[in-house]
Image (cartoon, rainbow, N blue to C red; front, side, top):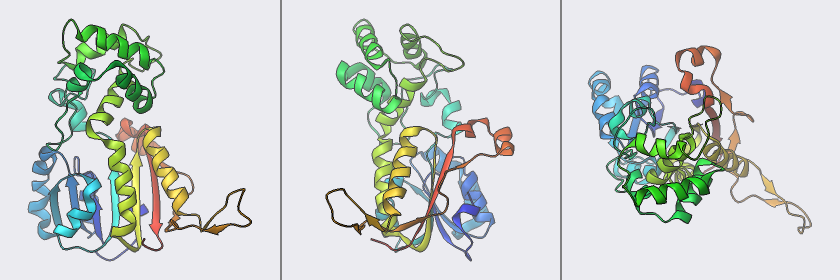
Length: 296
């Protein structure tokens, strides 16, 4: 990731997903100044140890990376040299049952990433109508059995509301067979997490904002973990890196009004064997990087 961001003297980097602080610490060690953003106050609290070491080199902000423009404006910063977002749920959140992300250990059915979110996964399961539940499970979870799962959830909640993760996981397992090592609840839990936190909307906002907050030559790096996120990033970079656009009904290609990036790599960068050995959860990670040619 650090190499993909390019070589500059004391660059100013936005780490839009502080999490455990690994990326931020690497940037700080290289001499970069970092604005680290996270929705989770616990992540910011843990990062105080880095703040004690690096002082003014690190700025901690509680917020959503989709608001990067207003965050930088409040800090009096016009542009930055790089933006990194790691879209995976942090290991600390996954491993902490009280956060409600895991279907392997019981906890409250919550899934909120920060204090800016009011509706929990339990609220969605207990109040949304069957068609809407089926829609988000199908679209956000890419789950073929979405209608069966939504129907079962609505039937069960009429008897007893959902409040715990394992209760929901068991309900899903009653209508979806386990295939291989994948838990039947995996896709539905992903869908609920995305819906609770508005993750895809936030990503789209960040991508659009990047054109306005990066300096010329600045880089945007996005690490995604599932096809929905990667598709958005891939499409954004493709549409932003073509000088011209063409349509069958046009006599000739026309200038692309969104042309603003050059791709650092045509294909996404994947985790190496060494990285996989250290962090098996990186097996599905894809890193895409673009360099801003001109702001919009």
